[in-house]
Image (cartoon, rainbow over all chains, first blue to last red):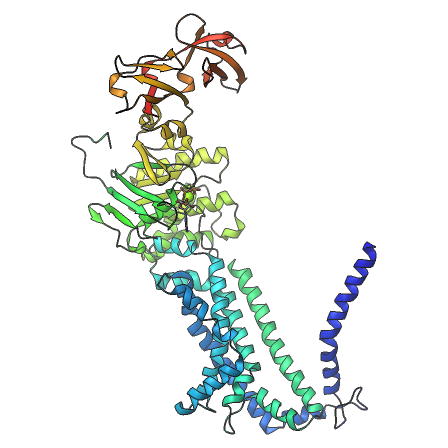
Length: 263
Length: 362
Ligand SMILES: Nc1ncnc2c1ncn2[C@@H]1O[C@H](COP(=O)(O)OP(=O)(O)OP(=O)(O)O)[C@@H](O)[C@H]1O
Ligand SMILES: [Mg+2]
């Protein structure tokens, strides 16, 4: 009986894995197809669709835009998120609990609603289809995550070590730079990476405020898929996965490193 | 409090009605008032949760008191931030800097004080030697045992030669031998440097052996402050009598004419009139187990029956029952001539000197 349950459990886990990874596998396989339409298995193999993507002006421009935006969003998300997390976690001020909860609101609101709101504010402000506009819109999504991650890291660190530094004569800024920040590195790396990935993959908000002058890679892909389906789509999917995976790996390595170094 | 000398120098530290409320049922620190002289080694003694750590945090400026004052050298420091107080605080949790080596931990305060490289190195080495950790400088806190971390915390606090040293149970994690050594070492450092020290502990033995004076706290309030002899022999409250050393509590009736005491109908040694509580006739009489003498029945004293007798190494503990049912513990030295009397079931008489007795309103 126990063996049967164990066998069933194992089969279940396999099924879940298959459910997640087989579509991925199929996409990767199709990306190497030589056919000019989506078919599985492909009748012949080639790298021609990779060549198509890399020489496609629109996609490459979108990739560049998305990368620039993701980098800036990651930086700003940290720059705004860290002080906010610090204040919410370490300082006592009226309305702290309220702000703590409100800051998570963008995670709960439907993205459609947010996008509409952003469009209504950004249009008169001339921010539509501009870098600042897209960065700001993405920050609405990423900041709650950054603040939350940094807040959790800070709260796990506890305040007593910082207090010890202060009794030894360290002013708040010195304490932050020499004690808090070094110990916060895993959270800093993790929150920046998540902000970058969220921004890089973001589509709903972007759809509202991109324009012919400035578009992102996910939007470009979305528009392309809307019109045609050929193995180029598979290649683009593989590229997106590869980039996200690369960021995750970098984080894993550096956070692991920082942890071994700092704790 | 009671021992203010007429020509006492102005206190180094003076606490007035110090109160801190976390928002619980009652304040964690409740109207604490006492003075500390320069160079004094004060023990803050009390049961877990009585507000010792909170008091130290108020001293260090990590929290602002709900009300009350702390003045150092005549100046109110309540509004001064922690980094301007020049205090050394050893946290109950050690609070070492995990991303720094032991040497960097200890040198941290000196660096902030812009002490030169060579002097820093020398002082760090000396501090580490004092806590028996020379040779550990390159390690990180995570590579040390709890007791070693605790000693790094002590070194980090003393190396800056603070004006006041605050120690929050700094020896709780050491084995008996090392604890004795560190007690001596801390007292020695304190004697040499003359740093006014507040030493938190819930170990009465530690407080009695190390401190110039002991402040006994209970539930946020100061029960008594005095020399070890004072708090041990002349406990000001039943709590102090019970918390420091063991004490028998005998519910008795006080007749103010005489005066005389009756416990379950039996007369107790006559109390000195100056020691009586202000009012009431129901009182608790406290006597330490080692102050009670055992005598053969009928020789005069409080009649009792031996219930149990236990040999605990350096002495014999005898438990007795009074005629009314109250129990009394007596400690006898193994060579005490009364030991043969302590046979379970035997009737004996108990006696003690009136000076060994404390009387409190019940
Ligand atoms: N952050 C806090 N919030 C609310 N109540 C607290 C907090 N810290 C301590 N208390 C309460 O205040 C009281 C005093 O705590 P404190 O830490 O000063 O005790 P302590 O005497 O140091 O005890 P111990 O010997 O266990 O360290 C306790 O009843 C405790 O529950
Ligand atoms: Mg404590």
